[in-house]
Image (cartoon, rainbow, N blue to C red; front, side, top):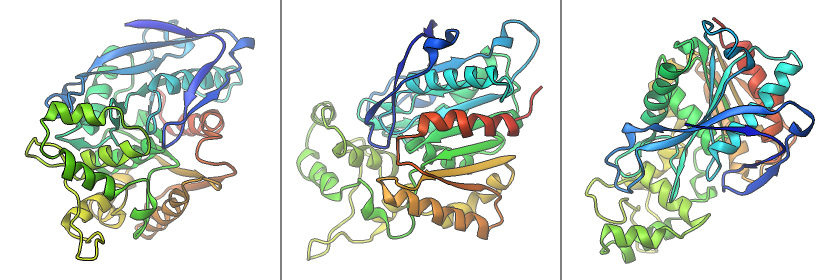
Length: 363
């Protein structure tokens, strides 16, 4: 376990495409903010085909009262970073925002945990995959179990909140839908969501995945992984999206399928295409199957910036909200003046943490 302190500033990487953006804290005029960075066991990731480690990083913030009253238990806010973002950066941001809110008397004391969602080749999307590992289980079983065991939490859904941005915002929706009795409140920031027909508007490129099948398919796994290890955004997005949603089980490169083409070279909407489409899409079927889990929540927010450069996120968020309303699933859809990245840190303090403070039960 490694203990660190936030002193002057931190780099908070924000955005779907992992663009690092400096987010200056106001810690210079405040007391130093304590947080803990550590590695936790991740047995859910064992056996993945990419060699991702079965230990992953988390950052834990404990409120000032934690050390004073050794019997008191606390609600916990978990946060899922976006594609290419740093769990440590978000952990520091959460700690700084919590200290500021407590100083202003605007929040109850809560534990805040930021956890890893990216690996060497890109993002996990927080789903279970034999190729990239069972990241859904890592969050809901490994991390939540570790935190409940090692810290004085209130180990009940009504005292656990889950937030996330971009890919992490998608992860919030995915985990909220597919798990029951783990989280009691959700805050999905600028989520990776698209409405029907918008698959082509995302950074996904079928020409990239087809190239991998055609030219890398005969390589040994180690050689294939070496070839793709240096690919950056947006090329790597197509690979890891396929690892998560269109994986193959034969253990051979490129570890995923690509939709077939018709005689004119156009992508066919075959069964493989449907798997890609059901990644960030397919919400009607998802809500019909698991919507009851969202109805059980104490609170549920989706937000987006009205100038998001990924316009399909704006359209997808509005579409998803309409589908939620149609099924009687209570939630808030919040539009704010901003783009995909510019106000994420500020909204942790102004909106996200206050929402969880109002919604999650204290001891």
